[in-house]
Length: 205
Image 1 (tube, helix red, strand yellow):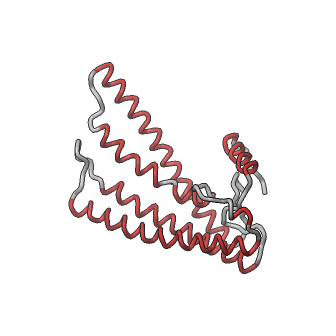
Image 2 (cartoon, rainbow, N blue to C red):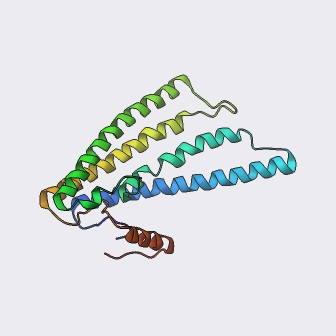
Image 3 (cartoon, helix red, strand yellow):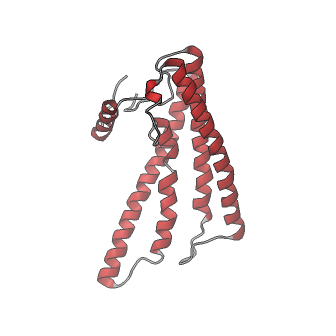
């Protein structure tokens, strides 16, 4: 398994988890490339303005369009690894089925919220398409980025459904280290994973 706190095996659940993770990883890579593109665009804008008095046309419009891409493309990836900010003080004290029941309820509630956000963001994107919404300066159409938001929420919803499956199976079987869900780790283990990720070393479990 790659450097991660998510276990894998040959079950249908784990295969579905790995398939979805490949999509999530591609989305996260795209977000990283978008960050690089924005940085390069900023350099070109600064040098063009400073040296030739020729700033990039619509620079602010491009930045405004790029920020949602960076913000939303990685949300499902982070959920898969358990990297979103949350309070673990209580959760770390739980064990066994109590822990999996707590996690299951949390993921279900998160899924309901994500479903509401998916519907709401789709309505917003559909309205942008219908009225031809665009940016103020160079009139970039805003609907592609706005449409990206419900798509990424839908991907997050798929991830949450897989985690509901994983936590339910753990709750049913009582297994200690279930697959396809992020396992809670102490600070030392988290730091070790981060070091392994940076070094490119894979943790064989």
